Length: 235
Image (cartoon, rainbow, N blue to C red):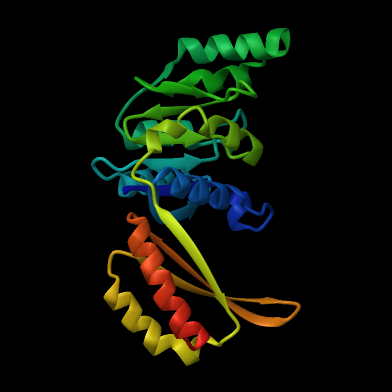
């Protein structure tokens, strides 16, 4: 399975002004495609911290997905910071400029035109529905922070994250975690190729535990799920 990391840029996320929906979407969508998210970092709209986070998030062969900070206002710092992190100049991207001029028409402001300044060599990732774009440079994928726009733009590059399918089974139980924890540890050791997660939750009927199993082999996941049912349902 491919591995990716996420970098969320925005003071609004760190201050609680905006509830981030992008993490939920990206982690679910990437998992569906066969890419595993191995780390998530959130940083403010500060050049040095974005540069540091981009550099730390880079790993050979593994993509870094960055959201937020590519708009026209003073706090949109991501384009320049990504260029600096990769030691590339910001240059006027012809296709980006054409899209901006076409989309805004005579209402285009100089600040909006600055959104065509991208790291040299970047390719656009235009959303098929909105026409809004992100960009890709090397293994760094940069998306808008607005959730609806990110969803649209992501589909332009979704194929880049396709990997071996991960098979998933969910088992639910009303037995509390402490009653099956030791037995579940044994099951996990028996099936090292299957990731088993235990997630307590609460509904109208009281506490429930959701056990999620994932792995590359459907038969092994099914076998592990049957063992989990045995230890969590007394069979």
